[in-house]
Image 1 (tube, protein in one colour):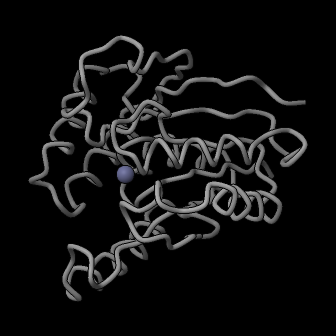
Image 2: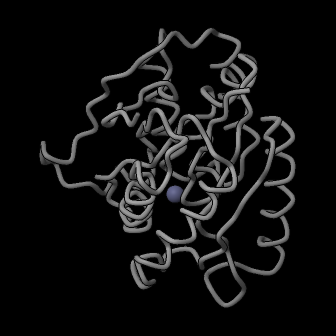
Length: 215
Ligand SMILES: [Zn+2]
């Protein structure tokens, strides 16, 4: 059975960036694995109540997507750029060695959110062929995260090179999932929805960039 590993820097990136794709892969008979790099901890900006709710939501979301495993490196959110890059690469490499995915989905390397940029850098390094020989394709998804803060320069633009038809059922599921997701008042969710509306055929979730193929 084919396996896909979705690397979400924070819980919710998987849905904003490739929720429809996760549903589609699952229906195609793939095993889908969900790796989060960070988690919310007390002492950061979140109350104990929000942290508890978030953990419950992760369990609920995992059921909706039917993931084979929910994995989390549990770095404190918004601190990835303060961690040892080598250590993060090593931990992701360990997950890749255990899961042995065929396809891996990475966050956008040009995202203005530092966690996303560092997450990409670490994950991309971990996907090198000599570290993760199971991988046949690495794709990068656009996660409409703090996109509204991005400076208007072309070099950071996400340029999709991979599309596939995302039937309405997946787009509908993805949209309703966004609806039940937390923080729906945040601008990024509205940005994600606008993106989704602009792409009626493919859906934002399917836009991903094929990186050099290993094999
Ligand atoms: Zn994120």
